[in-house]
Amino acid sequence: MALSISDVARRHSVFIRQQLEEMERLLQPSSVEDEELVRRAVFSVRNKSVLFERFLPQKDVLFTVVQDVRPAEVTVDFEQQLIICTCPQQNCCRHKLGVILGLYQYLGSVQEWTSKWRAQKNVHLKSLATERSPESWQRMVDEVMQHLLHGAKAIESYSISALLTTTHSKLQRYTPLEREWQPLFKLFMELSVLNKLWSHLNRTDSSINNHYFEVAINSRLETVQTIVSELGAKSRLFATDPFYDAIQDSVRELLFERSGQPQIRFQLYLIIWTDVFNEKNRYEKELFLLEKLRTDSDFPIAISPTLFYVLLRNSEKLDEQLSDLDTQHLHFYMLIAQLASKHYMEGLQSLLKAMLPYLEDFIHHVLAPQHRPSFIKEVNALYSSIAISEQEAVVLYQAFGRYGIQPYADFLLRQERYDEWVALQQLFPSSISYLEARGLKTVVNESPADALPLYHYYALEELRQKSRLNYKQAIRIWKSMKTVAKKAGKMTYWTNYMQTVQKQYKRLRALQEELDKSNLI
Image 1 (cartoon, one colour):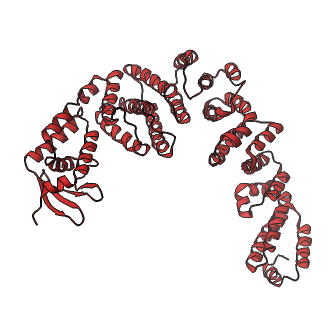
Image 2 (spheres, rainbow, N blue to C red):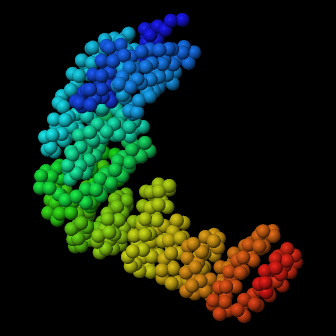
Image 3 (cartoon, rainbow, N blue to C red):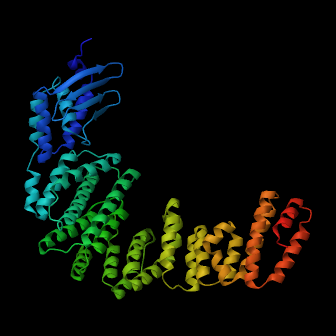
């Protein structure tokens, strides 16, 4: 039966129109490259270079070839709603667009679609890139984002990652050739795109409190961190000052004028202010602006001066700021404390001492259970780097609750309270192999006599299982115990101990056989 493309196109008109709309969204009329792609795709249709070879009705698959410099095979799977091209270009290519336009000509006018698409062009991105000013770079972002965001239409969270990738792939084509400008351009674009996207999400009431959004934004945060590291290795030109001013304004706007996921926004703010800016006058300028700022932001503005008192090493102002904390906001202070741990130990001590009374309530009533172990690990590492009193240690490890057993054990080791460490391990048993990785070797080296009760405890635990395999494990524990007893100078105790064990468990024949083979007695 002859292949009727008009019938195929009419039957799958919804899919064809959807694909054309998606390509229209992905292709930027202000981009020289995208404009060329559309021009060549339209030319292939007019020049009859799109060849519809065969259609499999039972599978709803159309096979086509686009005659190009190198012929490309394009397969349209209507059932799976997929278009596959053999050319190396990812996402939208001129061959896919040519095939879709070749099908669309049976449904509408290709010329009208092309004119409508080109009418969206406001200004060439290339001309904006050559102007090299914060305003022109911002117009580049606005031009690309306006085309991709569909006006007032809400965005599904699962599509945000792809949208960001597409946006940056379009903008990076205009990266300056000079190496000293490249990291600054990338950072400017990252912040401007995030700011524009976040504004759109807030305006359209799009959902951002979900895993998809967090994964997408955290990926961009990692990219920002990489760019910032690269930027720090470059010398700054006088001509770049306006761009740094624009970055300062952009990250402040993102933190205080956007809403949702305030912790992620604050992380970005911290990255910029700790790794990009290091001038005292800039710190003071930002602090002055924050003290005058009035906003309804979901980020607590009262916290932000704390960051700058740390950066400015102003202990007096920092102590005043920390006189009254809010338990709900403790995770923000935690981020500032991590910063202080790298640059300002006096400030770290002030922060941690101020946070201590609020930790227990925050961990058990504010923090989600799945986040508690990682948070406690980070907090414990910070408190381990400062001196705390015995009473403060009790408050700290009590705040950790059941998550604080190992941190408390580490504290006892640092304090050289080996007998208490041993008692704690008996109170919350684990295994000898685990303890050897978590401090038992230290106890054996420093106070071997204190370690003996642990070996005895775990050996008896093996005996209670009453199997030959467990008896063998008990023998291995006793061999280690013998070495420790010898190190402690308690071989007489050891001999009496093993004689007592042999006598007490004389009815366990398998154990007696293992003891005879072990040469422990």
